[in-house]
Length: 129
Image (cartoon, rainbow, N blue to C red; front, side, top):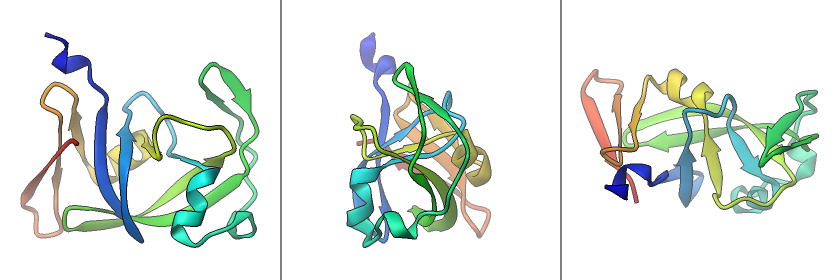
């Protein structure tokens, strides 16, 4: 019975293949921990200033900035805005409602899958890790 309580974790591409993408329909924004920047060949100098305050893990913090990265899921690649936070996390990337709605994706923690339409208007299904 507890299978439906598992987080929805995916392996996706942002420049390189990255695991532990957490899909969270309760999160408004996409979050990238600062430690992940080096995986994409980026530094703090590549970030754009952002004035948003985020409340993550029960505490508010000022993010380092924002960055646009291309996220590939299945055959679909979409430029996605990430808020870079200095806090450590149990995931490598958090994809929130901004990405879910922008992709037209339907995440299902019950089925541990993400359903979405590709550019040829065919349904693609990505299984969780």
